[in-house]
Length: 206
Image (cartoon, rainbow, N blue to C red; front, side, top):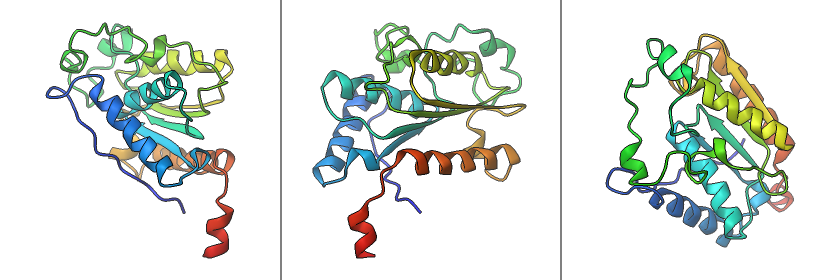
């Protein structure tokens, strides 16, 4: 029952950071310019796009721009240092390559820079929106995402975290029929109901 707007943005290696973040911010601003209330928006992303979504929030805050009503993240790449045990321990179970390419995106930016690795950012509930995040228990990004979700919770940001046992990277997208994926979709529906403000004008015209 919700509309989805899929943004097209520049990608590495041709266009490293911060090109994608700037494009995402332009798209977000473009929606606002069309009259969309930010309280009607959930920004979502999976994998590298999930990392981009968190970078977008930090960028919007730094520019004193409105932020969306909520974030929805699927196996987000939010720690580009890639030094957690799960990177090697889960390599045999995950769909990701063992040598995850981050250098072309960073192009000299340090991987622990909070602009590219949200796990190091100091999130504040005053500006960081309620966040839904899901990941697989057998994926390589598991430990970093656990740390990210725990950091949000300790900072006071509303967070709904789902780790699904035995699942791999972006499992709800690759295997939507799985019971674990269905649980994610139900949780997303609940998230939208809690955090999106109804558009009463639209309701009156339809």
